[in-house]
Length: 155
Image (cartoon, rainbow, N blue to C red; front, side, top):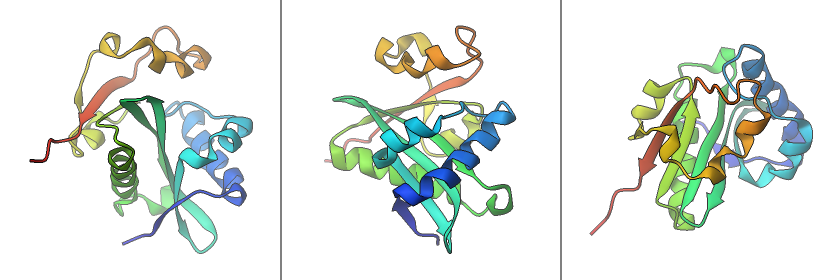
């Protein structure tokens, strides 16, 4: 099993390349370097040696809502479960923060459904979640699927 860890400043250029490689193929929203540095505390990475081979984000939107985003795995590291490890780390952190509802916008809904995310109409999400959408070249004609995860109640 790989080691998921919180990203550090020296990881940012590699995270930037990984995310923007996906964005260049139209599979993810591009992220500018300035945003990555500002949001570095939101990022998780998996490394092989000093090389970032996967990244993901838990971005808190409100007191009871967070987003999993930018789950990206290097081509040579796909099909090893790294994306699943990152989603699990994001959901664990959300739980630790007391956030029970997590959403995502994705072109890979089946992947997230494996992690108990379910379909939701985009319009059911609070307006606050649309902040990033205004920068997207596809706005307002979003073609991503919205999914939501609700932490299971433990008794």
